[in-house]
Length: 310
Image (tube, rainbow, N blue to C red):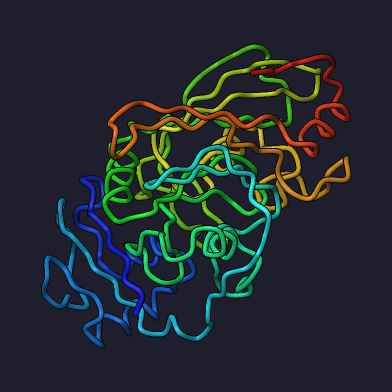
């Protein structure tokens, strides 16, 4: 049985539990959440939740998913670009196009399949059999750095840093329409799109989300931008930048319907990740060079020279 754990933040107080979980738990509909509540597979502070329960800040929710055995997750010998590894953590540079963990339609070829082969049984089990070791995710077509946990102690430590927004996460992206040298902050709530469940949107009542952006270079019609995250909502950078009129180049969901170049997804790269090591308590920072698809997009959009180097 897979078990997901959620800690209710202040801004989510007063929300119905089914609405909250269908927004927070990926690929789980509100009707399925209601069914799980009826079956007493949803616990709030250790007790079975009522179907109309309204959340209180600080509530601890355990969501149990009994159908996780529908697909066996197998270890696969898939090459990994490993930036760092020890007995507690493994830091990898994920390529564009790789899904982080198995889900409907993606039971193989994921980062989890590769980690299971490389690490064997030494992965944290906190997020269940479908997501061993996974502390945080990036989208399939976003490239860049992820850290996975090799034991539950490391997982807890890294998860706390994410929750407290103390983990350093810097992304690079090419956006439509010149930012004209500006930098700023988008602080707008994000939630499930009211009509298209596979999309997120800036909506009233959504979860608090903050993205800081800075123009690094300008080619006229496009800008190379740096993004720093305070929060980690689904599709956060993509949603926020589209909201202010600067969608990520190549984004098939939030950008223009027709991309002027041959791209396989959004030009978004998780370039820097910094965190306190769970055992040594020392700060560690890792950087991932721009991948080939990103450099191709830079060339196509008129950027010249080393516009962003480490």
